[in-house]
Length: 395
Image (cartoon, rainbow, N blue to C red; front, side, top):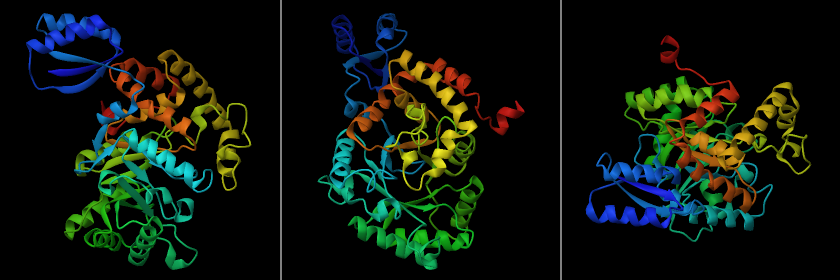
């Protein structure tokens, strides 16, 4: 039996659904379907073709939606919200500590339980994490280790820097532990065994619960897993990877294979391609945008490049598709990321409450598009960059 949560279901539909509920008491799973399908499904239920119950709900209730949208981090037992809040760029540079705390509160109360930090983000400070009024055991905090100070021993993935860097992050965050510590890119100067042993050590010391990788290749992740198994150490559970309309190969081809082989999940970032997908750069680079910030010349060059102009043309078409679906382009892009196999969570980067609430609305779109396979086909046709696995190419 399936629980069908139908948006703004009419009175007659609700009454018929309640009558069916009185006649059948069975266990259920949760699925959300658009209102248009409700009468047809009720007829199927009456003919005993399918058994279900229907509840009415509003799509504006993000907290209710997110209750059903928590996923395991890879094949570990850790449950994380499918949308997480990142602190890259915005926290500590674009927004105040008060706004950061407000964003984290709104996100948490909307069902988000994953908050991503790093020793280099906001100069290592994300004070809102330590000032949370909520039970520490009720949310997940991550950090990344690689870029620390200026000294040679204050960066990389040596045993020294992993341990000291994590201790420094915990001190700045005013936390006893983080849930996940990520190795933020591989370090060719540090042996893989040293990295895995250091990560195992910080977990055994209670400084972290799990460890993962960020910007590692599939081959490097597989090597870390093999070393862990060889020496009875703790393997990584997750890879953080960039993923959006124009960056697809790794998350759609390489990581699903790792997920099935060794259980490594994907936590993705930059679903809006650093704001490109929102359309803010369609008429050039605004003065208050990220591309105009100091240190982001690479983004400005990307926007103004020939490839950037081609991408902006495709984004205009995607905006029209979003309008037809009744959502924003940002919501469609985030929901599109969530549909990918093995993606445990998508990290959001926001600088105000309006952006956060808009992005959380992607949960509604993800639910609806689950039964609209033609939406994915339309997006693939517009982008023209769908990657194919070796198995698909052989077929």
